[in-house]
Amino acid sequence: MTIKEITSLYQTHKEQELEGRYITNSHIKPLLETLDSSFEVSEIGTSVLGKPISAIKFGTGKKRLLLWSQMHGNESTTTKALFDFINTLKHPNTTLSHLKDACTFYIIPILNPDGAEAYTRLNAIDIDLNRDAQTLSQPESKVLRAAFNDFKPHYCFNLHGQRTIFSVARANKTATVSFLSPAQDEHRAVTDSRKVGMDIIAEMNNTLQDLIPGHVGRYDDSFNINCVGDSFQSFNVPTILFEAGHFANDYDRDITRFYIYAAYLSAFNYIAKHAVNGDKYEDYFTIPENGKCFYDIIIRDANVGTTENPEILDIGILFVEKLINKKIEFLSKIESIAMLSDFYGHKEINANRMRVLGVDEQVVKVGIENDFVTIGDVNFLLKL
Image 1 (cartoon, helix red, strand yellow):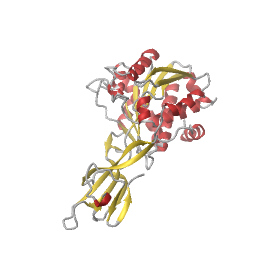
Image 2: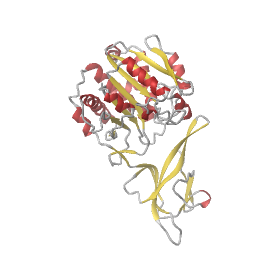
Image 3: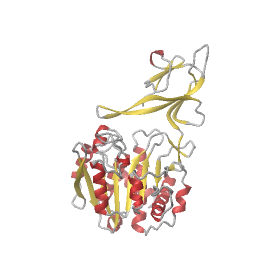
Image 4: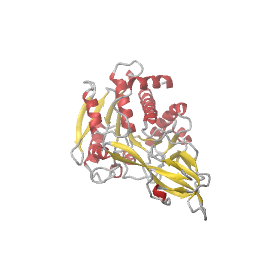
C-alpha cells in the first residue's frame, strides 16, 4: 500500500468519538453497538471488578490474527487505532477487501477495563497482567489465555504504549513507534517463530520510515517467561509487541495514533498477501534499539545553588499523568538535577546561569512537583 492510500483511508475512517488518552469501556461501548452482523461482538469475560471484557471477531480468512490492547489500562493509543482500522473495514473497500477474505481477526480492545477506568498500568488489585502469563492469577489473564487457546492464532499482536523518555538509540529522535519480536528462551535464540515476527516488523518499518524517518525503535528483548509475549512466542506463535510512543508535542498521542494505524495496515496487508516465512528477518536488526534519552523539559545552565555560591547544573523534568475529573492532567515533577548533556528535552529552556527557584522561592529538589519555576524574575509555566 502506498503512503497516500494509507493517509487517505485514515482521514476518511478515523474514529472521531475516541480522543485523548483516557479510553474506557464507556467510550468503546457505543462503537461496539454500531457494528453490523459481519462483526461478531461478544463478552468473553469480566475483570476483577466485574467489568465486561469484549472481543470483536471478523473476517473469513484462514490466517488467524489475535490482537489485544490496554493490557495496561493507561496505554490507549493502540486502542484508538484499532477502532480506526475497524472503521476502515466497516464499509466495502476494494483496496482492503482482501484483508477480510484472507484473514480472521480476533480483537480484544480493552483487556484491563479496571485499569483503564482508573488510568493505571495495573489491574484493580495492583497486578501487572504482563507479568502474570504463567501464574494466570487474574481473571483478565485467564480471559486472554482462553482466547489464545480457543482461537489458535497464527499471529499475535501485543499492543502497548511507552513513555516519553524513549529515544531511538541515543539520538535526538523520539521512539514514536517501537517493535519487538520477543525472545522465547533465555538465550534469546532467533527461532523460526521469532523470524516470522521480525519479518513482519521489517515490513512495518519500511512503511514507517517513509512517514517518520528515524523515529522507529527496537524494544529490549530480555527474556521473561512471565510476560505474555514471551509466553506466546514460546508456544511457537509469532508474537509482535507494539509500543506507541511520543512524537513532537503530541501528548494526546493523536499523531502517533496515525502511525500505529499505518503499521497495522502494513502488517495486515503483508500477512494477507504473502506466506510470511521469515526470509527478511535480518532487516529487523537494522532498527536501532531504544534508548532512554529524553525528558519532557530540560532547564539548561540553571543555578541551583545560591547567588553567592552558584552551582550550575541542568534540571530534568518529567510529566506525571494524573486522572482528575475523568481528564488526564500532566503535572511536572523534577526527576534529575545534574549535567544532562547526553539527554534531550522535548522542550528546553536556557536559564543562562540564573538562579532557578520553585513555588514560593523554594529551592528546587528532585521529587518536587512544580507548576512553574522562577528564572531570574520571570515565571515559566511547566504544565502543558
